[in-house]
Image 1: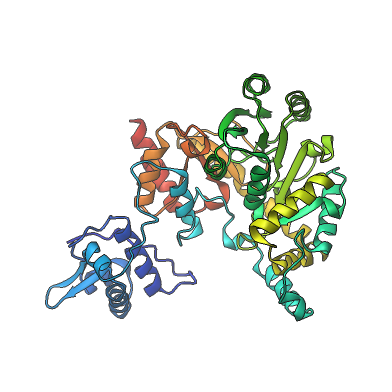
Image 2: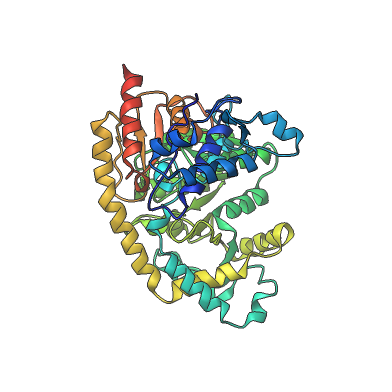
Amino acid sequence: MASTNPPLLLRDSAESLVEQIVRSVGLRIDDKLLRTGARMPSIRQFSDLHEVSRFTVVEAYDRLVAKGYLESRRGSGFYVRERHAMARAGRHPDTSTAMPPKLDVVWLVRNMFRQLPPQKMPGSGLLPNDWLDADLIGSALRSVGRSNQNLLLQYGVPQGFLPLRQQLQLKLAELDIASTPEQFITTSGVTQGLDLVARHFLQPGDTIFVDDPAWFLMFGSFSLLGAKVIGIPRLADGPDIARLAEMAALHKPRLYVINSVLHNPSSTSLSAAKAFQILKLAEQHDFMIIEDDIYCDMHPGGATRIAALDQLQRVIYLGGFSKTLAANLRVGFIATSPELAIQLADRKILSALTTSEIGERVIYKILSEGRYRKHLDRLRSRLDSVRDKTIRRLDSIGIRVDTGSTSGMFVWADAGCDTNALTEKAMADGMLLAPGCLFSPRQLPSQRMRINVAAMEDAAVWRFLEREVGAARE
């Protein structure tokens, strides 16, 4: 008889127990942890093992049969159904979570969209839902819905909702970056902003610099444009300047993408000296700087931005609100010179017409009414309350964080073992880790991994890490 590994049954979950059983068993079958033909525990055994009623188990098993995961054999019990038989019947099993021969960026991104509980996803790039303010967003949505509804039925302005751009002007002024509303283009998140800028500047064969480590999604995106992606080693206070100078002279890059503040994955920030040196090298070797500041609002203030030194001449500044408000509010922005803003707005029209003005109005409402600042204060305070505790506990089980950050949601940790293997074992246990290999353009094996400190409050995650990291070192 097959063991299911206890499903993720959370008594205080918004999901019913039936839904949780169906989801958990279905994922284990998709991940091939339950093999074709394996016999499921009997209804009584499952009920006793997981302390749920037999009626709950009956309904869950019936739903799994209806979904094609199980088959019922009269007088014998329930068995995992043959998967290719489902394909012949026209069903398409979910292959997004199957473990590939080699972990890659697409694998991690797919698994970030799994419906795992947030507390089981220490490799996620998002704050758990209960850290965010759904009432704040709901109130703004209702307010927008009560506005002139004819305005909600038509295209927005290609450059973006003007009151929001005016609000963004005030936001950047607080960072010592002077701008006008005409220098902004709204985007569907920072991801679209990066894509618009890259498509504007890059031709096949051009070189683009990124930090190493850095946000993994852009590596594949830039490669698809035919660009050569080269990583510049990232240190605690910014890039290795000697290496940047050497590589810039050799490769003549068109662009350099950098997180100045709360770098992903280390949450370290750029020193003022490094910011000045980067700008000087950009002028010397004639490349543009894309300053991705998506984590801006998680920093308490006082950090250096290259755009503040350059005032949006050679620096293209990107920001957004998906990390602090809601991942589903895909509202980002580009701030740049007036001339380039016009060109990027035209490119936006050709690729996507406009972005959703409804989302932009929601963001404007939240920013303009002042409640966003209080929300950020709460977020930063809560992150501060768990960060040091998480780092100390990681150290106690042999996972080192050698560049301790004082802000942000991530730590860049050294597990002392192959984090690809660790990630595979975690997925088998229904947890998502983010192995270090994915954060480098070279994607070489790594002992590093990115840990989201906001998703480290589940005892099962700590038990797993303590057991597996210890075993890997023996």
